Image 1 (cartoon, rainbow, N blue to C red):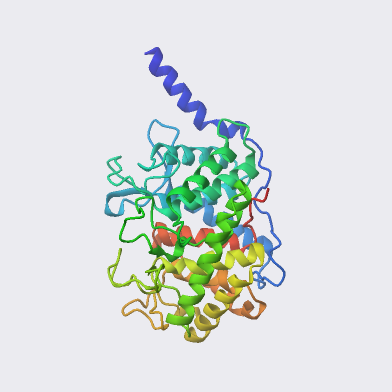
Image 2: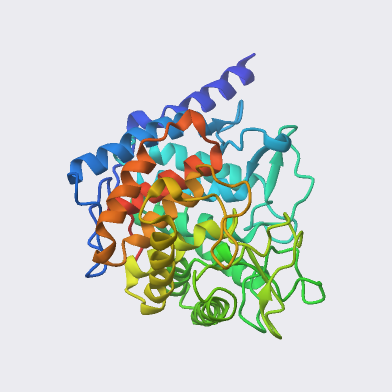
Length: 409
């Protein structure tokens, strides 16, 4: 009985740490000054922007952060779709969000550390520093390979955590961040083409060794990784993928500037993936993976002013404004590379809507459009959308409100 009592006492202490919460060094809101010329919604006050983020974060955390019974571990809930409890993509999103919301959320550090412990408890079979991409409701990982995008966000979040709380506590965020960045470079990057592999399960002899998921390109992350571990190879990945995206826009989407979900044959003549390459008949279209590109690419311009980012975003901005006639209600949930709606997709999807707001931020000529998307986006209720839409919405709201920062050395 005494042993059980002490176990319960330990669990209670861990979950009670908010009472003694460590102060954050970069508390929300940060009101970051993005690259000169970038914009935010200007039809409402900064306080209103911040409060919208706060309100949605409270709802999001209550719905999607779940604790593992009896353990100091938490995960971002995948809503048991396909009996999936958690995916590494969502875990990465959650760890970034919680690190950015520190101080407003007084329990952010405890929540973050619990999310970290869940990630560490579910490693990929190839590296203890990478996360198995899915955990099921029965608690098992039937496929212990990784998903590259999830690992990249987890790595970035650890750099944020180091700048937010320091690394002298029980978890050395900096050391853990350096370890996962090194593992990503070793197992999830193609060292011939410097393209991004789909997972650590793809090896040199794999049939998809020269294929990539376009939404895994996170250039601002890569620049942070390069600074963190002084590894210039990340610059090669950034340059190679920007060049790849430029060719894809020119050769396959000259009018709309869209990038497909998956790109194949990178070592020869890169092209959009064929139908059902990996996930759906729309693997070669601008679909539920590529919808994140305007957000991921434009963020690089906001933080670093990389002109390659703005060139890509400008093309997409011009097309989306023209094809919708500057009416947010005309944004569809998926497009062909020629810019036509995917048949039957004329419904609202926040995972498509919110990233267009981030991309609009790169130029003041998009001011009225940005204002419209913000109002349109925040009007939707959380109950009407799933984990993917709501989580992307929250991440993008943090960026749009001016509260997304980079973990500089």
